[in-house]
Length: 321
Image (cartoon, rainbow, N blue to C red):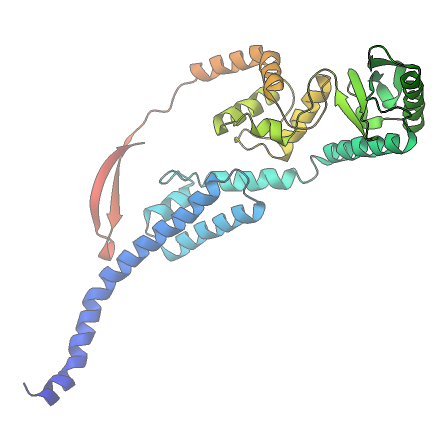
């Protein structure tokens, strides 16, 4: 065949090759695209602090898989809300619902934190020390934020006349800055002054907790689930047991801390976690026994295949599910 003949015939060859190659190439691209999309969803699932926007984006990716690759195993699993390659598709909607329901759950905690700061600032303005000593007073704040009785001077142990004058001045400042409405912890509380003129409130029942003290615990997801379970079992509803200590869980921790006469920060430390376990030991043991007595769903052997051209199944394998 001469050159001109080859050129005239070449389009037919190219067309034939495209017809043969594109279905296979398209299938491989579809498979890779599904896997990459599943990978994106996995990243969001693994992020305990994923925002509502992140979770919604993951759900949009699920919809895209169903729309663009309806015959894929992933699409079928999404429609049936079954797990697929470690992804729990049903959990995303649940997590979004929890976030939506908890938009105002911690407003009380925010108010309490603001009140602590405001009262400390009030004392710092009202109280003027005449000595450079640090004072520590023990007081009991009851209902309505009223100080019950006369605050006790804890430190220094043998005050000088100047330090006694500062003590009386601080007691007067406490009365001037009352009531301490969000300080009704039902237990002993302390106010501490520093030589620099600062004032801080600290629970005497336990050390003050914070996000840092809780991070130091290096809680696993299973441990966070256990915390949620224990709180719920003793009457402090976390609105779900998902291993993510969101706003509802923080609110439940605050309620437990208040009932336990602890500074309500919404965060735990090692001693408070131990106290929570002691407080919920009986209820948690009963729950574990009930769970152990429940009949377990029997696994079944299912056939899993990849779908090729014209719906032909290949690369089949069996798994127990």
